[in-house]
Image (cartoon, rainbow, N blue to C red; front, top):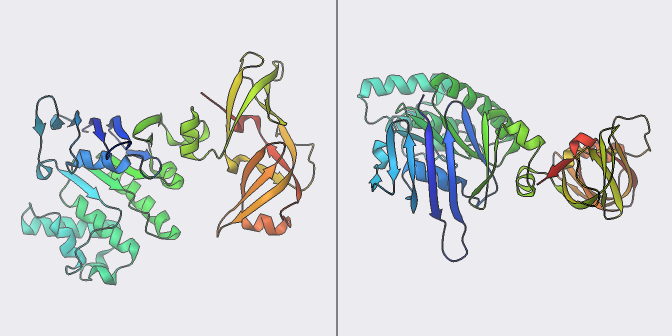
Length: 361
């Protein structure tokens, strides 16, 4: 299998605009580029595809050199053999679904191209859409046609730029499984841009967290989400509670360290830092449990009494701000808000396991 090795440096605009400065490697499986909008993720895909020209760098796929600023090499887009799936499909409205996919296979003989496209349509479950125009297709069907078009040329690498952002949750779930299955069947590297945690966890073999044009952490998605190593990485992957405090004491026999954060004491796993040392803690809002009663028989090391200051409701979640001497952000379901009869001013208890609290460098 070919490995993508991309060193890219590019100023993304003028003045104070961030400088993209990354070294990306992608081989087997799906490599997820994760980060907020404007971090530089799409620019990485565009540089690999040849749409964007780096100021400096070296981009290779196996033995093929796509770009080398030192040697003056810039391989044309059409010679890079890259499949590209865009966020907004970019299907031709006047062509049928099959004709759109065949457009991507224009370099093959017509017969072989048609066989390849029909095979892909069958794999993606959209054979019945072949004669329909894009306006007659659902969002999920349009994205499947876009995938088929990108795969029709038998690319050496696939680049996917937030391909599921415009589809509903149920369709997204099905497409995630299909994309994973396609990658396994084609056995080529996929570089996948998203800021959706579910997509990253379910698709990524490796994840590279990008922020402000730089790599802030990389590794297995679950490891990064569960244990971000820096404050920047924690904010990017969704550790909504980040606190600065001082080491108060150690309980070595219990493997615990107490940290004073404003008017709150939080117990974490033992860290061995000197008493009085400054430390930054990160806690995901989803890792905090909430109760209306004080619970003593629990494995959670922290049981903190507090008052709800704010409640923000969405369709599938409710975010609370609970003050326990310091403000915690807590994510629960709307049903929990209703069942526990939670309102602003309600007294509650937060349950936080020591291992859910991460020490950030």
